[in-house]
Length: 439
Image (cartoon, rainbow, N blue to C red; front, side, top):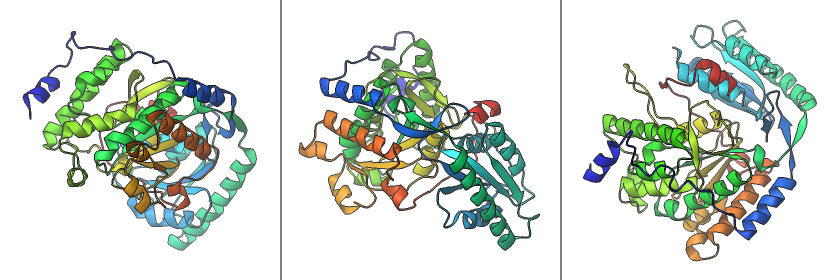
């Protein structure tokens, strides 16, 4: 590790860091102001939930509570429109996984839930159903062991979701939405040299527009921001936010040291990235330029409008279990658990993944990747590098795409039925289980 990085890792709590020096509100350009005015007045119809949040989809979610129930859960959802699946494979319970599933079950895009268990696991589908019903959503559950096995359970499950789907189509009220009602998350993966030059900056430009419109923008991957402690603190909106950002950074740095690995891969090197600092600068570009309001944890919603960092790094624990960002899908699920109705995924080298619950919009800064994987890529930010678009134009174009998807246009992963998910054992001290349920 370089002397500079060691210095950055040891600066926790210093009073002379430039906290907030770059957390100033920038005046939108005339074109962006026109877009913001339009966004504030033009609306689309969303799905109003009992807690006041609004969804851009109206789904039935099937949740399995142990790997033994995974086949039945997917068989129930197979061929059923607007029915998605998530699940936890572990036989023993895990507070992090339970918070995550409860937050996903009460997501604004979810109208109803069916929980399916085998019958001998710790995670109880009946308790998930009770929490979902308490949120005002219809929910059902059953054990496979008490329902006659595989075929009988699949038949029972399909009959149940048919009733739930018709109920939420009939009873879910509609309500107008604008950008101010959106929570949008961003993840990057399969990064190359174009990700930091074009893909992530385009998202950052859109995030500025979203924040200025009164929405909530969430980015994560603190382990991909190693070396940027001073840059991150300079963007903090206030001293409390600065402390949260500094603590999250320091924990990420300790984590990387403990596992003896930083978040950089052979594919990153092959794509033109040379150091973790270079990758970190590119990853941070997706945050845009607005003040960072604070840090949230997995299954915790942003506490107000603005730009937020999601900390998904495991807290120190005596069992030493849980990885941060073991794959891109895990990070995307964490963002959805924070209430993101739409997630942006920046991939320079190309990825074919999607996500359940929230539409995934895939952005590449590499026009060659866009041409080679046109069926999978939603947005070609590589036009920045050829001069076809300015950064401001790219941000506005992305904003228009986000609105179209929010209005119901399927993203490329949605149209291909990509719904990858990953819920793992992990340890985070907060938020409490109750806070996770409310999220």
